[in-house]
Length: 399
Image 1: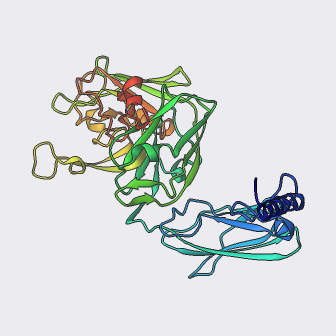
Image 2: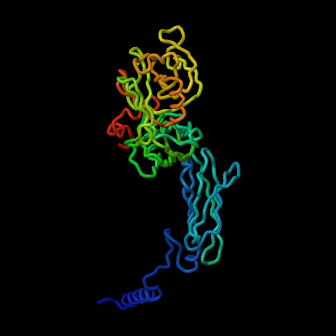
């Protein structure tokens, strides 16, 4: 049996508990927490978040995103702390978010100021600062062929697309993910890394005449490795013109030229002699000159060495970086159609050379067979077609 005093104390405690229960709201709490505003007047106060949330060494390609809860954003400014120029951005139609629409710059500090208004009508200002990383070096996405060189005439069906970077690429897969060639009509294609600075794209078979190629390198902010980052994004468009394919045969000493699959002309030729045979395989025209000085020193055979030459030639179209051209050579006219006497070029007479020059252009194809020479190397500017499709695909960093 409890003493009376103890019973009264117990009753008082129970009464206090019941009173506290009666005063609380069902299913709610008055206790503020870190996940949101408290009940009552605080739940109508606007909350503003800014990402990235301050710090240094931020990738400049990372967008600045500002969000509002329990209210709406009024305006946001992101400005270079040193220069004062503002970064473009866009406010969502519902006023709940804002995002930059252009990248930040490398090695810069930015001040972010956001103004918002809560459902309680009270304004709020939120500020933040971010600093972007500073690359040791930057790499530009240089394109071959240069778009300016082919803008009017387009490219031929054999034309590979080449990105050449000024700095070595260690993280090839990361860079390749940001490269694209969209063909219309759609055709299968793949990238191939020639070396650490050059990556080529070609289709499985020659491009279809009339194809449009949209080429992009979205590499700004991409880590190339070893402190190198992409300098800028780039997008260009190429048009593929009619199909022009020349077939030069060392056995017959003839070259047949096909326009959209139909034989357009045949002409006698003289290819490289035994000591300097013309490379086998599909060559792609990369340059053309009505008058051109050919100098063997450009590929390592200089004055005083056996095989050196320097001569001025007309109607010259380059088909490799190894000194091979299709051009006029009046000195070999007697051998054209019967024997190979050149230093590796395909020689023509004046009339045929001029016709070839006027009809063939950048990206058009010269297929060489039975020359007695080795296969054109894949690295010899446009030796891309020397690889089987399976071997070509294996040259991608994503395979």
